[in-house]
Length: 347
Ligand code: MRU
Image (cartoon, rainbow, N blue to C red; front, side, top):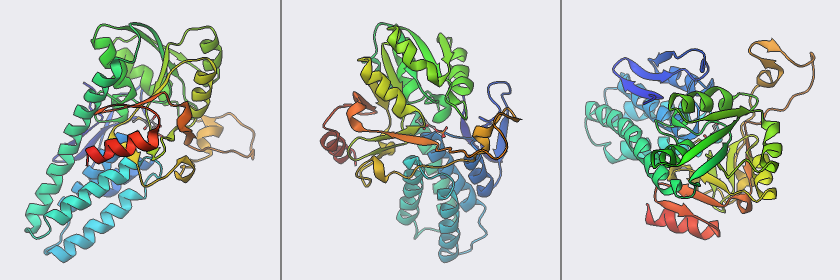
């Protein structure tokens, strides 16, 4: 099983996703600042993974705090949480995870400093275990939506690497294959960071799931040829009305799917659902550096001085989403009702 991240006594250990698929190397972040940097620079990326990474960063920072009383520890804790919360704005799992660490801190704040430190490490480790179980549950629920055989299109990487293992959208594909379905995956390359060609293709090939990489602009033609039975993607934030923020290009894929009568599924845990954000227009969209667009593998591919836009995510309006697959089951329109009802049951 791919270990996206893990807690070690030396620090938080990540597979370096910027080096895949040609190098499988690992980095150990020894301070919370190094964890924040790893999130910012995409050594670790993907909504659930950066949530758990942030929680482990908090645990690491608190473990190494020199605080001798609760007041000092709380000041350190707040500073560490703020630093990790400022790394990436879109995936709500990051803020969900930091909130969970804050709740834990508050619940045990009367205890001695050493106990608080130990409990926060345990909480972060527990989040990793729960994430894998959540993905497996999503897989079980979602697998029934996929056909007995055929090709599934996915965008970005919503696999083991975006989470702590198994994956969200790719978890559903994995579960379907494990149940005997004969699936082939078209992986959108996912310009500019190439999460599809570098990461999705890498992990699916490791699992022996037949995979074809296509450039993003090929998806429409392939759908028109009748080659795609379903689209499945992950999400970085789902607003209360069901609008879905996910990797830039997802919106285009959703429109293409609707035009061709292909179901468009989103697989996401409850930690991705944000009922405090009423609709997709309120979701903050991260802008990343122009260099991701102007350069490829270190080589400049655009003229000097050209203007560039690089939003990392887009928003797919809820009416394009055929179903949202969660760890508790499948949700459908009207999402304003089904999302809030399922969140009420689960809190
Ligand atoms: O910029 P990234 O690579 O962190 O973006 C990741 C995605 O958009 C994934 O599709 C998303 O996190 C869903 S996987 C749970």
